[in-house]
Image 1: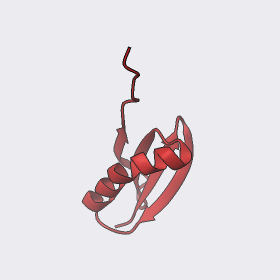
Image 2: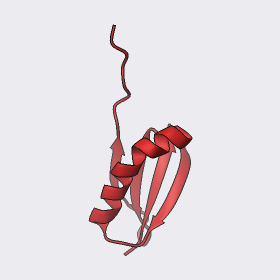
Image 3: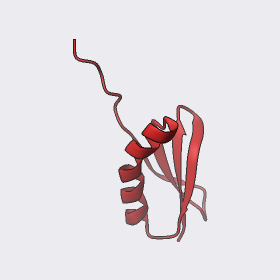
Length: 69
């Protein structure tokens, strides 16, 4: 089954990648690539979407880093 990994900056999609593997691999890739997508495109969250059903099967967002006072 294929999945679409969608990186978002707020509500706007900043980058999408088709992932033709299993869900576990898609989720691992999505979480691993979020820091790189943040640096490149300002992505703040990622979703994994089933291509067949359109269902969001995984959502992840990292907490923004806060400055120490």
